[in-house]
Length: 313
Ligand SMILES: [Zn+2]
Image 1: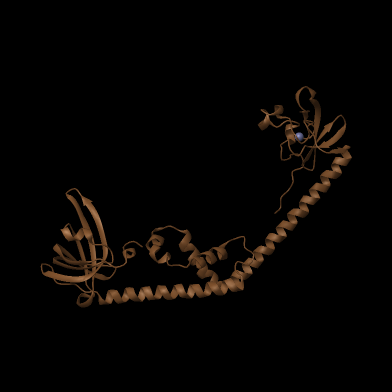
Image 2: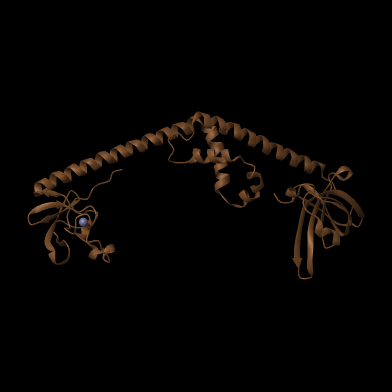
């Protein structure tokens, strides 16, 4: 990646030829740093040593361990240096070898990375349509904007396997994002999801087309249907229930919306069957579906849904 090793500085920030105290307690001795090709060694009485692999540039003690044994490094027993290297020339050879080894390691890593990236790009190009679809799926699951929230109900129906495959396909570290089997599975699941979405849209469109008003404002109506929403609310004057009932049978296509506090309303739950008589207050529309807003109503009948689970999804 074009990483140039600085010639004098090293990871510890020491310069060549600095005087340091090496060892521990009263047995500390003066030593000199030796920095070659960015590698740091320590010169003690004319002999070059590696740094201790554990205490490093603390040269014999570890400040985090001062409460135990005075912080004496257990790796070098407080000597403050590691392996004996020998002369300055020996150290220069060691430094050169280490620099070369690191360069080889870096090159191997870069090559592996490039290979992984190329394989990934190739897969994504070869499966462009699938990848685009999986990216969309992944995006649906990883963003929490308003749109995603509106789709929440739809998203909960997404098979978990598809969510995982989408995440795998979009993972940046993956060499071949999906195996052939996984790609086939993803295509199948995407097709199922697309079909379910299309069915949803069709049902929605049919509902819009079939929707109608129960009567004109001011008229008294009786509607039999299924409770879609039954939500208690509070106001300064007390409480009430926000009710949405979708007509069934002869009342199919009618959506009744009623905010009130009549006695029978409180027991209504989503999925229950009910018959309501009320006066039409206003005609409205929500997402294309005609809504008949009513007032001064009463609950004529109430049949709880057999499955209580229908009330809370
Ligand atoms: Zn040490």
